[in-house]
Length: 390
Ligand code: PLP
Image (cartoon, rainbow, N blue to C red; front, side, top):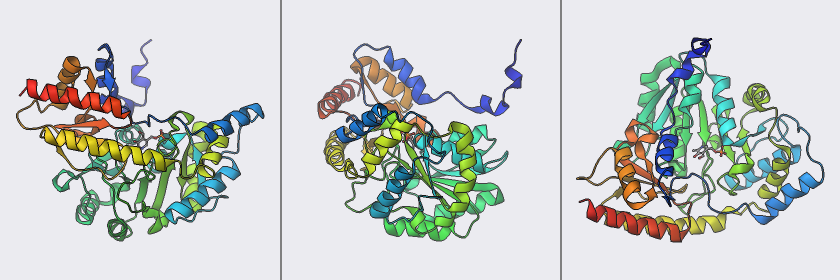
């Protein structure tokens, strides 16, 4: 029996991830060096691991309440207050999720119905669109390429006007994957001034908030417009905890009360022993991102210097751990083809910019969540490739 027509037909509109496709291609190449992954190369801090192990030994193997352990929500609340001046009540304004990924899915699925539009400044993280599509919604991208990937209040407002009533939400992601762009207090305030005039949710994916290299503190848009903002954060990037799958949603009591319904039926609750580890990360380990940040800055500076010398155009990233570089003129501009050829000839893989939407075509993204030694090898092979293929 062929049941293909009995699926939610929106699923047919979801394209296979280009990151996955490219990864499959390059994984066939022996001894390939990959600067592809969006995950820290560091290990989870020792005290955090110890807390997870202790929780297992202590038989913490039962469901937690659906919003997560109260001591963890308290730790999230205190961390967010201290770091970003946000005030969220642990009792009813914080949800512990299965990574930022589930936080994003639960938020979008709670908001969207068929025909709704979601604005996304692009190039953008490819994890949002499939869920929007599944819910029957549509993405409207805001092109940031004319302005060095920086969203302006003017383009934001114009997109809200053009999109009209069917715009239900905007997704902000800063520091950004893939561009590394982040925003100052002044810029965030200007966005908030625009957004508060419209009845739209602001899903603010701040998963890289602890990796801001500007010397200023990360500023959450929730500081200015909490009543329409859903803050997404988590421990994957800040504490090198991608595999533990711990994320957070912070929102007003009214919004949280709706999101918890979706969250509850998607996952019941986040993994219990990982939640215990997360408490340690946000308390004793609250500054664990600092030493990693110092390393990332060194690597970023090194790559920017090397690639700029090879005529790649780079807007120096102010956060996260990615370089988004324009392929120099005179070389193959199809990023998939360019990088496949480079990988086949030099055994080094980056991600094609086209994986981050049409506006990413002509760019490559590399992750510097890799050792300096690996990065040095990758850069010297890139130099050889560019010289040999001029
Ligand atoms: N949001 C962005 C912008 C990301 O880059 C990633 C992971 O790469 C995620 C969310 C997913 O994070 P998590 O591992 O916490 O689900």
